[in-house]
Image: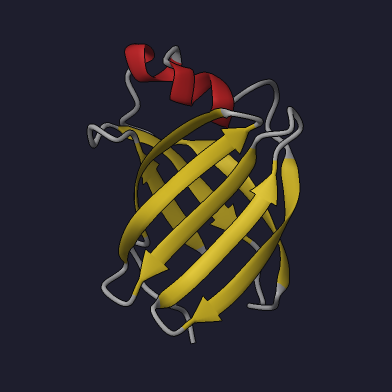
Length: 114
């Protein structure tokens, strides 16, 4: 899996999470603006959390699980991201900071890379 699309809970396109290769437990990932994002979504709470400043590459943990794959990392503002993709290439994401959290839908458009 080299790319995951993140959407808001309402299903609006938000970001693409690019993951480095080769697939290993420790990888690097970076958020890219989804080409169909709207100004309202970019300025939303989710948008401000996903795109807090400038594009930054994050060290991330990638793990295959019985149910699919998990990716986890912390952004430059301390938000902890967890993305879970199931065997059907669909899943969810959440970001949390202390007692605040946001979440949404996720999918891997190209499926699991071998």
